[in-house]
Length: 381
Image (cartoon, rainbow, N blue to C red; front, side, top):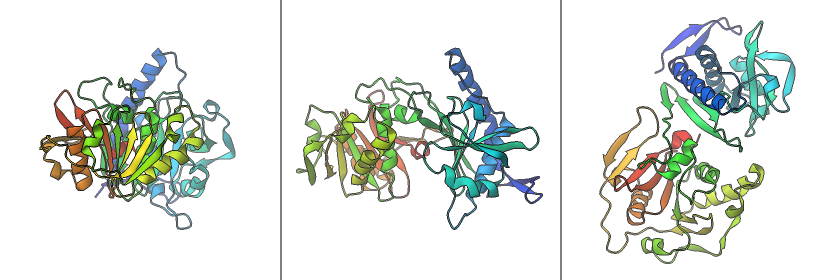
């Protein structure tokens, strides 16, 4: 159980301090300091770097607000540490609100839509306070999101023009996961993992990384599901599929191929629709050009190929797992069949969502000549 200390609160005279927030705030301060230096060297305009005390206070408020209820609903809150003048089209309150859990819970419905944040800044009299709400924020900006009761995600903009966010840390109860960044192009670093970490991939078929990120999120519908990414222009992957594909599509669904430059509001329904196909028993088959070939596909071992015996399981967080296991230890049939598919079809990738919220990317590591299974649910919250 998380250990708590007591801090003064204007609301009740005493407020419990979330120990995990205090533990992680120095690391987050170091992350934003390093990112500020990099962006400044590139001539980018950036926001302020929050100190560790500020980071702790914002996480602490978001955590306790997430445990409250407003009309029976758990609040989902996004707090951005930014001054009003650094945002686009800010909605500014006549009187700033205290950054108290009860206050945040009441105002949370105003910022439930993606991309909306409550703005937090220093008040000369009250300390940190909520000045209003905004959508556009600087490239360097601490964002703290209460995703579910007791589940806090610390985010930062990726630096891309699309304004996509990447997860920096995930706090759940007394567990803290700090995302471990890896440089792109490494021999042992799979391309889809680099995509979710927010790096550009040198692999040509990942043309619009955000589509894969959004597909991964759309697959977390609670039913569990699998998606196979296969190269276009070749049918070799069919040697690992029981014929025929149960729900083959003719013509192939090409709605995702035009989404690279599409507005998010236009892209989301199509991506959610493809994600929902993974809820059907079997796998969705998607080409590297984002054409959906069918769903309900059953995986089989390729004729003449050996059964997969070992898989390296890793988690891209500090202190995360790094184990070599038998595929049966990965989970159920979806995980075992995905590992076999990648073992037999080494120019493909597989995404597997579990009913319990786990999410795994399977890709072949040419460097280690082994299937890699990356547990990435902490990147998708």
